[in-house]
Image 1 (tube, rainbow, N blue to C red):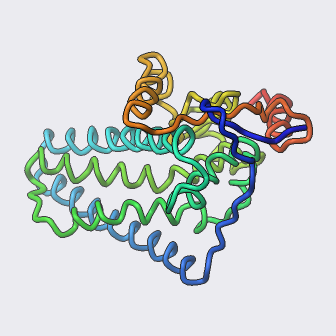
Image 2: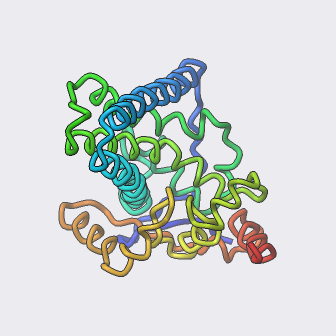
Length: 269
């Protein structure tokens, strides 16, 4: 059985496991990111909610609620774009990105269960660090929380940061055989990424349903041809389009095959 993967330019990349070895320092940095992001979110939500409560303004309240929901949707969109970029472009040898980002995304198709072996900090650390510059900017800048448009900016970015922070956790649960009961309820009601819905991405050639926070935007983006448009744009600027030839979920003995079989047995969920 061949485990080679190739691109549409006929060059071949082996399906290798590139281990990113976390040092104690990196682990501490990720933990700091989680703690820092959570602290910033707490401060920003307290400022926002306090301003809305003290003002007693229905417009500000509506703005707050709409911004929360909009930020959650924005996080779903961002998760899809990032997922798409590392699935479809770049190579394992790309400087800075190859080993740390491209390889895990590519390996995830052949071994989707690997994500479930990561602890909380390893799963969520990098995403929390990515949100820190935006959250710190909101903390420092002198926003007027009684102004509807300024409140909207603060809350939508804060909500998107929370969604981004939780994306990998939701993704991990979508591949877990026995997630917590409350998580199963959220999945079944499509509040977070459902297991069955995400399996649509794990069907060869893995070129659809990239959004992995909630998956709410997947059908819309698929119907308007958003991902195909991004592919054409990337190729137009000289990026190499990557396509996996091996349908891992159809290869007996592969972790992807085992997961697909398990999903079929538990299709009642």
